[in-house]
Amino acid sequence: MSSMTIPHKSSFKFGELTSLTGIKPYVIRFWETEFSELNPVVAEDGQKTYSRADVETLLKIKTLLFDHKLSLQEAKAAIRDPEWKMHEKNVVANVSSATTYVQENVKESLLEALSVIKSVKSRYHW
Image 1 (cartoon, rainbow, N blue to C red):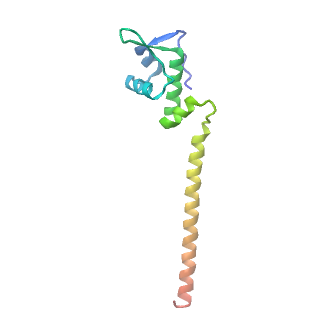
Image 2 (cartoon, rainbow, N blue to C red):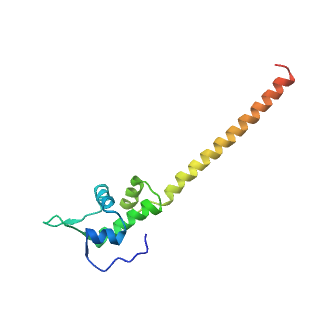
Image 3 (tube, rainbow, N blue to C red):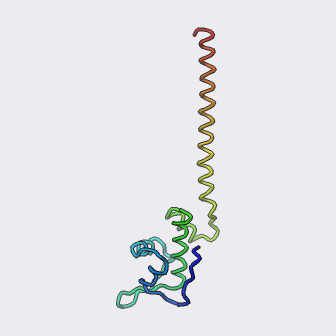
């Protein structure tokens, strides 16, 4: 997570939140619809206030999405499940790399086999 220091306050207004986190207002509003862990309190005048836990959650979401490049679904899983491992993203990347490696080797083997077939064909005038 970010190395920023959160001021020692129990609640933050929306404007403070956007300045503190560096997250655009429309992004915060969207994340509120996607992450039930964000629980701002809405006053009678419609003004939202956010707890310290909300600020920490927003910063964690920001880190997961922007720094670790997780998808929205992966970030939700990471926020909701403390056992979720960041390396899952790397496993997918490794499987993808392995698949590419296998495909390249199969292609190379097929080209070698084709070369042998052409050689045999040429040799026996087929």
